[in-house]
Length: 127
Image (tube, rainbow, N blue to C red; front, top):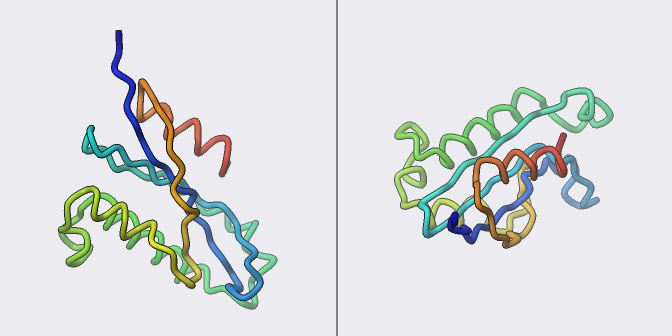
């Protein structure tokens, strides 16, 4: 019998005007402490962002997502936060903030296959 992994996930969002609290889901970050698992999947649908073209710099948004992924992956070029342990990186990435790139609050679940769960959540909540 396969072991079920306790995981947490958060939805990665672009919030064009923070004061209006409107957002566009662009990805998922999934974490399992026991498994040492931390992965994200993002897709920026530029056509969805076009309605905010006057307020957003698409290239800057892409840079923010790239930095998010570097930290998530523990990439050495991601700065000091990327060098933190997996749980600390997840907590930093999902901390409440008022910026254009935000995440939802983390939600828990159980999974037999964390990669499959990441893809399922991405397809349900982002794609």
